[in-house]
Image (cartoon, rainbow, N blue to C red; front, side, top):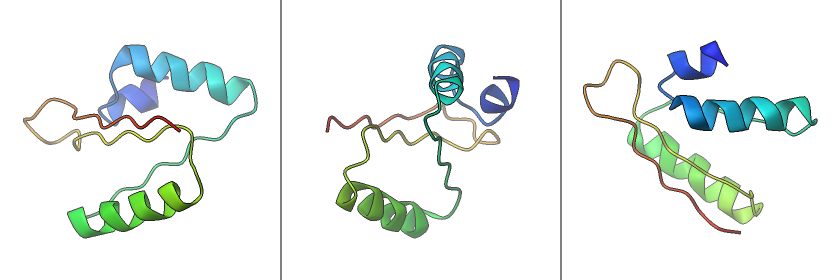
Length: 71
């Protein structure tokens, strides 16, 4: 959980991911430029990923930005 928080994921969401991983689900993280993120977002959407969130990089001054999707 600490590593997820270190990547800029809010503690509450990091706990959710931690619990889901322990249940055998997968967590896929993509790091890249805006174009890379958009491409990954398109691939995930095509494969009907259940949840997609985009967070600002931990070095950014901005707070984490999330873009949840419902599928």
